[in-house]
Length: 434
Image (cartoon, rainbow, N blue to C red; front, side, top):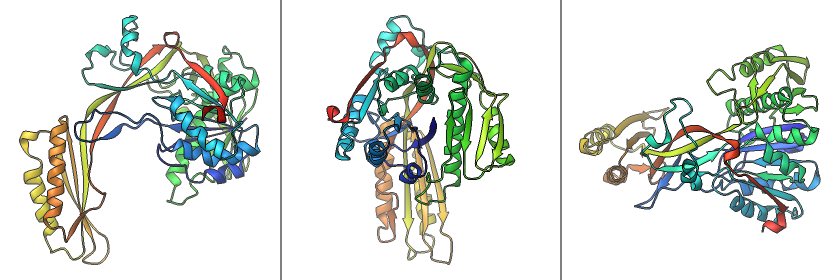
C-alpha cells in the first residue's frame, strides 16, 4: 500500500499536489487539516471557530483526475471539524463537476463533542487534564471546540464500504493508515506489532512532510518531490525517495526513535507504539527500509482536545515610504509606546522598529502587537492603531491590511473512553451528497 501524508492549510490547496500524484501511483493520500487556534472577531459577535476547512473542496477538485483514472486511489482527510457532513456536501459539488459523481464518499461523524460535553459529564465520565490531572470543572474559560481524535475503526468500515474519499473532523494521525491496512490486509486488531508498523509509517510520512516544509524555497512545487511510504501486508515499511544513503537513513532513524518520550506521546488511539528499537537502512539508492517497531495494546481511550478562549490579540505592521521624513518612524514608535499601551487597559503591548535592507531611503516598518484578556481593550487599541497610521497618511500605510482583533484558543487535552461516544460512517456516491 503506497501512502503519502500532507499537512494542509485550511483555505488553500497544497502546492505541487498534481505533480505528486502524476509521479506516484498512490493507494492512499492523507490530508491533515488542523483546526485553527485563532479566529477574527467583529464587534460584539460571539466567538466562533470555522466549521470546516474552506480549501478542502478546491483540493478535491485537483484530485478529481486521479480519482477518475485510478479506481484504487483513495483520499482520507480531516477538514470537517464541526460538521463532516456539511464539509462533504460542499466538496462533493467539486467531484460531480469533475466528472466523478459516481465516486463513493464517506462522512465520519462524531469527533465534534462540543454539543455533548454536558451529557458526558452527566454520565459521570471523569475528564481530567492529560498532564496536570486537573478536572475540567476547574476550567472557567468559555469552550469553543471539543475535537475527539478518533481511532482506526471508522476508517476500516469506510474502506470496506468502498469509500474512495473519507472525510472526518479529527483523528489520531496514525488512524487512517491503520484502518486502511487492517481492512485491506485483514489484520486482527490484536496484532499490535503490525498496527505499530502502520503507526511508524504514518510517523515517517510526517517526517517527509516536515522535510518538504523545511526545504521549501517558496517554489510552487513544494510537494512535487515528496517521498512516499510503502506498507506491505506483513507489516514491512519502506520509504521511497529520490536519494537514499546511510546518513539519510540515520537521520530518519533518530527522528523515529525520539518519538514516545513524553508521558502520552507513544499512545495512539489503537496501539501503544514503541519506536525505541526501530532500525532504518538504505538497501538501495531509492529506498529506506524501516523495521523494528513494536506495539502493545492501547488503553481503549481516545484523546480529546478541548479548545477554550484564552484571550485576544491584535497585530499590525505600519510601513513607511522611502520619502518619509527622517525620524518619523521613531516618533511614531514613541507615540505608540506612550499612548497605545495604556496601563488601565491591561494586557501586553510590544513595539518593534524594522529597517529595510539596501540603500538609504529604503522602506521601513513599525510592528505593533497587543494581547489582552479583554476584548474591548483590544478593540480600543485597534482604533488607536488606525488613527496613528492616518496621522501621516502620505508617508504610512498598514502593510498587512486593516488590523483585526483575533480570539486566541488554548488546548485542554484529556482522554475519553472509546465506548462513551458514538461514531457514525455514512457512505454515498458523490452525486447523492449534492
